[in-house]
Image (cartoon, rainbow, N blue to C red):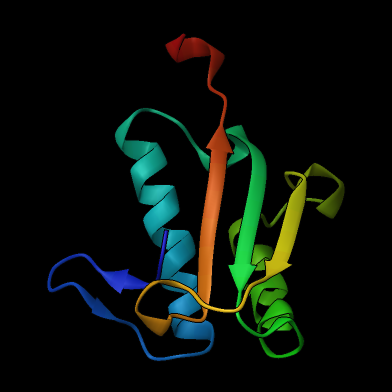
Length: 101
């Protein structure tokens, strides 16, 4: 997921607002099928600048998973040369919700 406003398909401003919106979009999509953030089994974050955006991702992840960090999903963060439309962060979550299986 990317930090795109669903109502008009525009990117949120760079920085925390864009990272937060990417996480919100991922959460909203999971909730559409009955899952919650606690059902996230794996998280992958792609960024074009690890030095600049990893701290922002860490900050936003704390906002979303307020519990003990030991309960966070396993996360991989990868620096890439380029993302779609020259974006800076993309979040990918894999969810497991046994109640829906």
